[in-house]
Length: 91
Image (tube, rainbow, N blue to C red; front, side, top):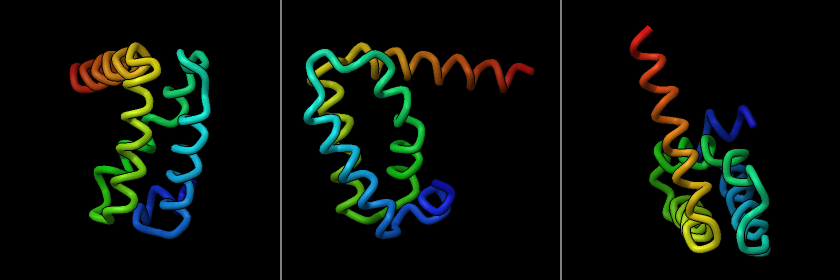
């Protein structure tokens, strides 16, 4: 996990997103409770930290699948992340 975060363009990073994308595409609709919460932070970190088109495509595939299957999980994660950010900047 540390390597993926420190080098989001590595082969392991690309493979981890491909595997995650495959898992999410096979999940039922709606997604299992909390599924996106478990991967969201690292997916967005990897998307923000790379210019590798394959990694970007895999990350966007995950986000697209979440939107199609259970957009509420994405929205809840966004609200939660925003609250954490606001809380951290206020204190």
